[in-house]
Length: 121
Image 1 (cartoon, rainbow, N blue to C red):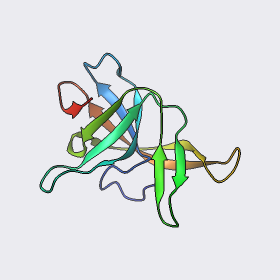
Image 2 (cartoon, helix red, strand yellow):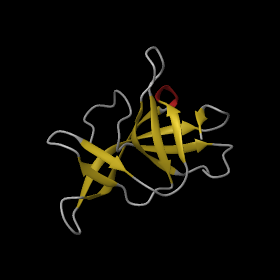
Image 3 (spheres, one colour):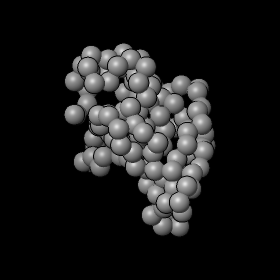
Image 4 (cartoon, rainbow, N blue to C red):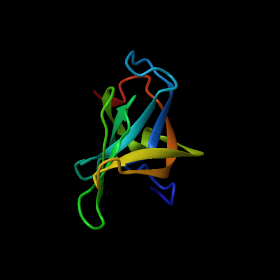
């Protein structure tokens, strides 16, 4: 989905390496489903669904794709807290192009320490 590792993008994965959140244990994966629009001057924040089921890739226009997922808890996380890894992972996305339609894409994996109140619930 992403060719550069510059910043987290929808469809990328987030691996939890430390946490005090009882709903999201260490080793959990989340998927970034979008950005939360911040006021000017605020850090970028991404919306992440953890312990997700197979996510959906929705076409919202010729050049626009939307990621949707359900599963466990959702958190808004400041993108600056996500640490880049060199890992890529194949992720399956269900598509709206027809029954049984799916795509597998290579996505970047980011890691996060969820200890403390660094995000909204």
